Length: 337
Ligand code: NAD
Ligand code: UFG
Image (cartoon, rainbow, N blue to C red; front, side, top):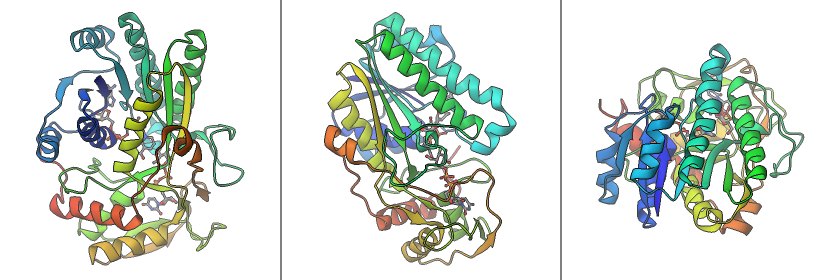
């Protein structure tokens, strides 16, 4: 199977390409390198003996997409491309709606013109807003509290309407919880530009000496130790979730919605302790005010994916922190230019 992977040069996309190759599929990457570097390609080759084809392009360019879909005889699309920084989305809503919403509509339009009818979309647990309870099932109500989250929700709604009007299509919405970790080889990992927004990249940059201390956002939440609780999932497990989705429902018409999480919640302080243990490095931190827009706790009920896709997350917190450390300590400044 030839799989077009939009955003395949990025964090989750690059790890998914490796698992696609291992599963005997052929990934073709389409990415504008807005938030990634071409030097990820030889790293992919190093760990799986094959370099995926890479086409530099923007998902808002319909003609280019049509050329690529036809030329590579694409069977299905995994759509990772988009912007993902919550804070930035508040400052630049137009850019977020243009990339994430308009970009997806252009992509689907191009697929329709080429007769490619299978799509897997990167959604997020952010679509559950502030959930009334945990664990969260796919039937929980959805809402958004910032432009990034709203863009994901809008895309979900657009794709739902589109699938209803085109019942022969297979559209899968994968709602990721908190992706962390790296390929176990230490060759690939998360390489945020500038100051990391997310917890794990920040913690690992403190451990490697790039930053002085972690600010823990809020210590008065009604959680086990007062800090925020999330469902951290290893990026390799997440990557495998995409393979399972393609294999199980990628050629079954319908709208398929799955949580990809572990079903376990860990607090910020638990993550810091696990990281110190894995790295052998101290992670100094300061307790500060809550970050606006954050929720107290969020974790998945992943049983639907287990039942229907036969997929379950298998990696532990130790795997997540050890693999992150292997990547961070071996590549303190991320990918080379
Ligand atoms: P990432 O930024 O590492 O990867 C996204 C890739 O898309 C980058 O390589 C970027 O260059 C590319 N891109 C952006 N806009 C593009 C455009 N208009 N045309 C072509 N390429 C474009 O992000 P990631 O962490 O790998 O996330 C992948 C997807 O998963 C995103 O859609 C994100 O919203 C979603 N997601 C991520 C998380 C997370 O915490 N990492 C959580 C939930 C959902
Ligand atoms: N945190 C800190 N200090 C930091 C960064 C984060 O204490 O420097 C805390 C947060 O307050 C939160 C936890 O660590 O309690 C996790 O924060 P992240 O920013 O890593 O992740 P979020 O759960 O806030 O959001 C992430 C992605 C979103 C996505 C969401 C659900 O950033 O894009 O998961 O999938 F929508």
